[in-house]
Amino acid sequence: MERSYFEPYKTKMTEPLYLSSGAEREEWIRRAKYNLFNLRSHQVMIDLLTDSGTGAMSDRQWAAIMTGDESYAGSSSYEHLKETIREITGFDYFLPTHQGRAAENVLFSVLVKSGDIVPGNSHFDTTKGHIEFRKARAVDCSVDEAFEIDSDFPFKGNVDLAKLEKILKENPSSKIPMVIMTLTCNTTGGQPVSMENLRAVSHLARKYGVRLFIDGARFAENAWFIRTREPGYEKTPVRDIVREMFGYADGMTMSSKKDGLVNIGGFIGFREEELFRLATTFNIMFEGFITYGGMAGRDMNALSVGLKESTTLEYLEARTRQVALLGEMISQYGIPVIRPYGGHAIFVDALRFLPHVPREEFPAQTLAVELYLEAGVRGVEIGALMADRDPVTRKNRFPALETVRLAVPRRVYSDNHMRAVAEGLKQVWDRRDTIRHGMRIVREAPILRHFTVELVRVTKKEP
Ligand SMILES: *Cc1c(COP(=O)(O)O)cnc(C)c1O
Image (cartoon, rainbow, N blue to C red; front, side):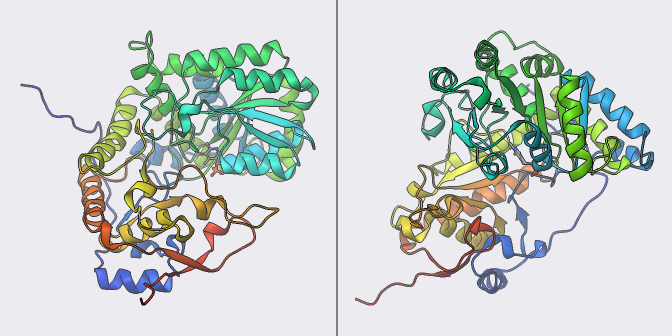
């Protein structure tokens, strides 16, 4: 008899959930102006807004917190983290930062200037923001499959080498400070990059004299997908895959709130001492002294343990299995989701879910609100609201994908929670034909409007 799967950990501490009624949620979401970011945490039963900084730490991590060294300079927690980062990634030099976007800010302060071009697979929003803030351009060279919902291509995070080479060929290397590969690619659905592609991108970058950096927020999940999907890696230890991945790059930025398994933190890894020295000045200005850079000693300690835990087979199996289970349970009801399932989230296709809701009335936001009302589950709209208006014409932009993202926090929820999410979605699915109207904006900010936007329901016009 084949034994059932079980998680390689047990629970030592619990946090109660407030079990709300539909009537309460109706009132709360109205007061939140139909913006899920405005809800208080107790108004949400299962929170799949993000997997960033929302994970549960292990008892080893909490124990490491108690032995943090809070010295301003020369902290042993820094030395320990430096050793761990070298061991896991192979980068000899590193700077701690308070989170991932801070790592981008410091690194780009050294390397990116006005008029530059930074190609890669689909850049994460803060990465793109920090590039565009410097009047440089982020060029998306993702493979076409990345934007095809039904394609089962296993490495939708890959770069199209022809698109990348065109950019490298047509521009002087002095205008291209780096190529950035995001592992896994969050923007296109938590999709992995293959080792073969990473190797080829690295060769291309070197051929044209351009540095390659990895945005490694979910590097461990990427390594898992290489092991399970790429021929030749079936038996390779996760840590060896991780070392090989980073071995193709000149450095990395990291949001430790993801695969660092901590609630706050980030870092930059460098191969070159000279670049590390240049970045150090900016780190001291923006983040803090070299040996803490915006992190407490205790948090650096927890990160050292977290990086080791996230690069084990047992952890990664539990993690990716649960996300895939959610995807499977939702798919079983015939609900359209992006495939293959991402490493950290499931993306529900709102255009096919709510075909009667016009795009001008934000179908994904409408679906996210309906799911909240139905089951107290908070997802997030990744669609026209988030895509904002065109900066020149001020017209709404309608991106190719209009989805609700259900991001699964690490080690927080059980499979039963996942089942409740899928069932809640099924109940909305069953009454989808009655949902014919969406949302209308009543107030919005000029940039990044989705965080603070205020909406009302569009009510049916009288005939
Ligand atoms: C979260 C994230 C970032 C930014 O990190 P923060 O810690 O949120 O500042 C950068 N890149 C990717 C791919 C991310 O997922």
